[in-house]
Image (cartoon, rainbow, N blue to C red):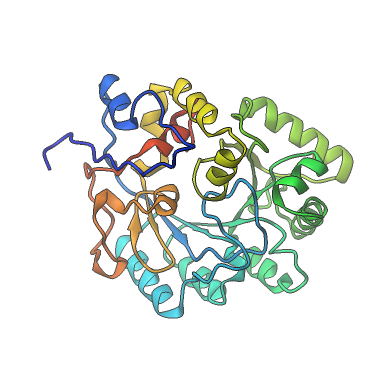
Length: 330
């Protein structure tokens, strides 16, 4: 593969679906852009698709019935990979990573291997009455919590994530605040992630964060550090919902028409490598969901001597329009 060539993998679409006006790779080419790796400083670990919720916007189709869950042997191989790679950030995700029986070992081992450890949580798995010990572990190791909190509207949130999920999430945020999370100067970082509840793109992040901060503080006394407002990726259950509701074509057109060339420099796949529950490597969690292996080659974490090399090609397809729409997805 020659320098500058961009691997483009096209998913086979059903008759109800249609592609944007141009494949993502062609849009990059038209804008004289290349999507190759910079220095990789983040290891994202998807410990499995098991989740206690069935969220409509989930790009992984995660849920209680999923059996894919990282086993102890793969956990050890991922830890070894992190040890020989010296990443700056370890980003642990799922499904609901709290439900993996090896999550405590993974977190404890990683805290000695990277200065910044992040755990992505839907809050309800963390606040199911069985995991107060995990909250205490996260606090003691100063793990950054990135919490999914899609809406300030209870009906909208429950519609997207499941009955009573909103109140469970509010209670979880209160517990985390009581532990010190989200307070300035505590060293315990609590960030929220908001996603639209329908087939539309998110509003500007600055205004959204201000509103979340005001409402959460006024109504429930909740504080947090940052809010990240991201578009939903048309994969997994969200893609299925878009097709079923007749919104897929319009949504893809919105992503395509919102393409921002300036966002390409900051997309996360340039500096991140994602490892799946079974140990295979991807350029990001979305490519993991779409089955697009890192650089288009199936490589196991046990085979990698270190981080991917700068300049390596990044596998792309049309869901990549999500990360380059508007302000981008970093």
